[in-house]
Image (tube, rainbow, N blue to C red; front, side):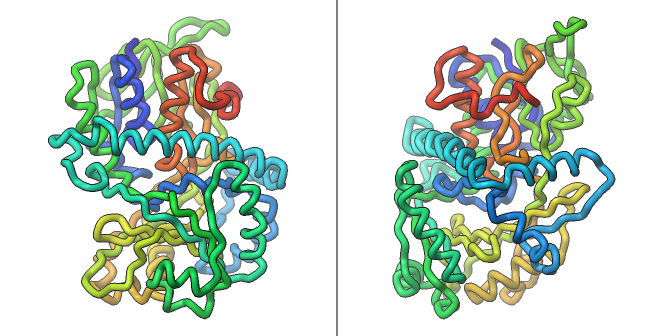
Length: 437
C-alpha cells in the first residue's frame, strides 16, 4: 500500500519509519527543508513516560486567575474572536475534573510505556548498529540517555499530594521514590543553590532524554536508504485529493504546490497546520496551539548544570541535559499567531535558570548564546491524541499530542500501523479514536 504522510515532525517521521518497516511504500511531504524543523526542533527533550497527566486537571481552573496576573506565569491567555478558541476552552474546562483526568492519565501511561519499549528497541536494536546513519555514538546519534527525572516541589502541601499519588502511580506501572530535601540534593548536587526552598522531590529513575530534532534526522537517514520511501522536503501540501460524493467520499492522495500525488491512504500528522488542511473534508479535530518556549544553554567547564532531568513543579519549567547543552523549556500560551519568539518569555526562562543553577541568565556569553526557540504544540482539550482512521475513508490522523509528541511518538506510530493493518494492538485503539473529529 502506498501511504502519503503529511508532516515530518517527530510524529510524522516515526509514522513513516513504522509503516516503511512493515513494507509499505511511503511518501513523506514536508514544507520545511528537513525533518523536525518546527514544533519538534527544540522541545523540552525529556522522554517523560511516567509524567503524562493532562494539563486539564482537577486543580487547574482555580490556578488560572493567579497565573494570568503574573508576567512570568507558566500560562498566558489572550482571548480572540475565533469561535474555535472558545469551543476548545469550554471542552478543556469540562475535562478539568478528577474522573476525566485519571482516565486520561491511565490511557496516556499505557501509550507512553509502549513508546518507551519501542524507543529502547530502536536505540539498542539493529538500527543502532548502522554506523553510516546513527554514527555508533552513545545515544544513537541523538544524545539519547537514561538520566532519570526529579519533580522538585517547593511547597510542602504540593509535595505531600505528590507522595500520596505514589501508590496509585505504582499500580499503573510507575517506579518512583519520594526524596526529602537532603536526598534530593545528594542525588543532584546542582540543586544546592535552592536547597532551602525544596520541600521534597519525586524521583523516577527510568526517565530518558534526547534531542528530538536529531532523532528526526536519524530517522530520515535510515529511511533514505529504502527504495520504497520518498522524503519530499520543501514540498507544500495545498489540499487533499478526494473522489466520490453523497457520503461516499474517499481521500485518494494530496495536492501539492509541485503537483498531485496519488496514494492508497493519507496520514495527516502536520500538527496545528493540519486543521485548515482537513477542514474541506469535514474532519474538524478540536486542536489549539499551546505555544511553548525553550532556551538551549551551552554547558561550559565548571558550570553546575544538572545531570538528572529536573522539573520545577511550581514554575512548570523542565531542565534536561542533552549532550553538552542544557535544554530549558516551559510555558503554555493560548494565543493566536505563529511561533514568533516573545523576548519576555525567553527572559523568564533565562532568569529561572540562573536562579536555580546560577547559569543561563545571559551572563556567560550573552543572550544569543541561549538559542531561544518557540513552537506551537497541537493540543486536544482532554490531552488525548487522535490516532486512527477518520470519518473519511482513506484519511488517517496522528495528531494532538500537545507537549508529549516526543514521548508518545513511537507508540502512536505503532498504534496507527496496527489500525491500518486491521490487527489487534497492544492497547485499546478506541482510547484515541479519530472518528469523532
